[in-house]
Length: 115
Length: 110
Image (cartoon, chains in turn green, red):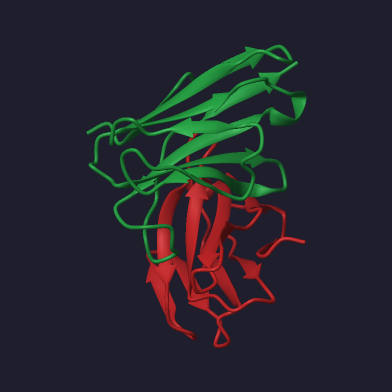
């Protein structure tokens, strides 16, 4: 099993460009999440999904959109990238919901730089 | 102001030393998790503590959840270079928020 995979691993964008980050999981998890990680800030939740066809906003959703058309995939889109979106993005999945008694499984991350 | 604070922010020690890192909050948490993140990878769950005062041991790692459920500590005995990484605590305050702390970056030198 591959667990949680993310593509691409690295990307450099110019301000105003758009891109989509792809997350895939093979554990048949209902719940999937997108986080961003910045120095000194920990992981902050951008959007999440409680099942195929559903999405919800997290702590820092502005400037991002998501889609969960298939249970195993969760896409994160940036319509018009800004330098403030330079970060490392992590996708995660879990069998149960977002609570600290549930284990989240994380992908290896995507390092995005917006110039 | 972050819901979860971690200290110290950075820690560099020699192999064989003991260390303790802390996770603190002014809020009460239903449970807390500790994750370890190695460079270039995503976090991996180490332990979940759910009962106030609970102590869990994982080989050389000892985790404690405070009696008031507002804090937790991670103690490593005889640290090894393989313990190097970013240690993150995470928790939810009874369904209101699920948050990660900023992390403690540990470097164990051979």
